[in-house]
Image (cartoon, rainbow, N blue to C red; front, side, top):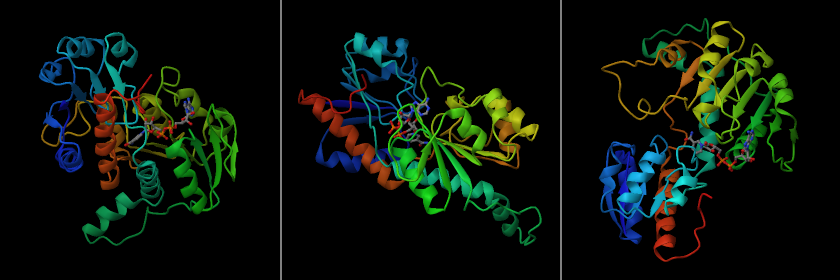
Length: 326
Ligand code: NAI
């Protein structure tokens, strides 16, 4: 099996090389993200391995099918970037890594939340300049606050455990509610109105794009913080910026951004960025943005590499595909 791995970073390569010691596949690493311009590079490969900001649309799938690719092995949990129905029509199966470390993402959402409510980014810059003044750094306790969890799957549940550890009250919304001790399920509107912190842990689907928009932001408390470690398209960024400017929301911490493709995972420090909304969000004192790094722990990277290669092995051996996207 020859695997063409797209959008490769040094940490991807080192973890895949380590995992591949027990599989022995021929892996070719490309820096470029998979899109209609780069898809031709899959020539000769049986499997392509895209990441979250690759575009696996009809155009790309047509090229992959023509080049004889048989499997798209996503090395992510989310698959909103992949037209998996069309891929199947063209005879290409799609597999993913449904879970690698839900804790990595849940913990990152709390790292962001704590940094935001305790103004750590400001404090860090100050002390580096030997400015030990505390004015402007008054924070907020998490203890006793209400955390609204949108999506109670693997990552959402890990976040619930953490929130409980902080002594927070947990409200949840999920179209498929589970039974979780100490968690009160409610409708989305009540969750938004009642929460001090709203954190998103649901996938991006055709139905929930801009789940957080001008209207739903209006429903939230003026002091509420919003955390998004799921997918950028869940939030209407323009509406979020307007709400922040109008002080209709307390702050935001985003690990994902709807227009992140082509910006996140790249060094733009020389050129700056052309996306005015993102630039303005970054400039706000009550906004923290990280570059889709929720998953980026060594435990998660190892699990991603091992599961991806196991997915390929199942395909190679004609076994049922445990992690097929259907
Ligand atoms: P999961 O499949 O275990 O759980 C998702 C939950 O969301 C399910 O319980 C589902 O019923 C619920 N859901 C679906 N639509 C919803 C809606 N409209 N409103 C509320 N809940 C809804 O998925 P998991 O592993 O917890 O991951 C969640 C998301 O996190 C992924 O889809 C992905 O977009 C994102 N993610 C982000 C990463 C990062 O590095 N920042 C890394 C991994 C995943």
